[in-house]
Image (cartoon, rainbow, N blue to C red; front, side, top):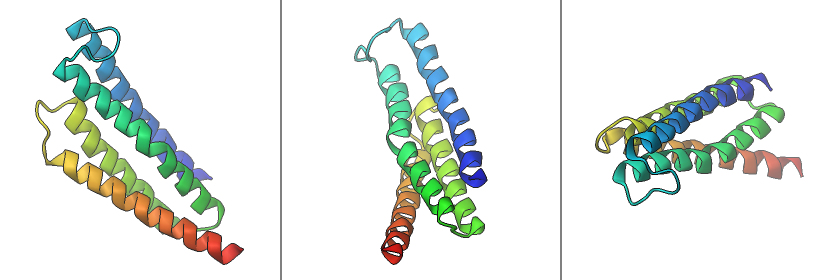
Length: 129
């Protein structure tokens, strides 16, 4: 499943950046467990956690669709949408001093990708039974 592998690799690099930003914030704030009520820690931790909450299911759906023979162009459209979405969302949490429009756009694109992938998976699953 080379298409899913491509996006899994790229998204893992995004996760590593988000994780590094959490580690950097821990050093800067001296909060080594939890968020300590610190706004910077809360923001960075939620950016990383949000990524971990959404991306695995998106990749599972992408992989299942690829396994079932979904058109490569559609898989790339879904994967690229997810990647752009998580870059926008991650930037808002890990680098911006406030929440720019990228947070909303990233969340919206993530939801859109998940909805389309879920409906395709449901449709293909129902057609196969």
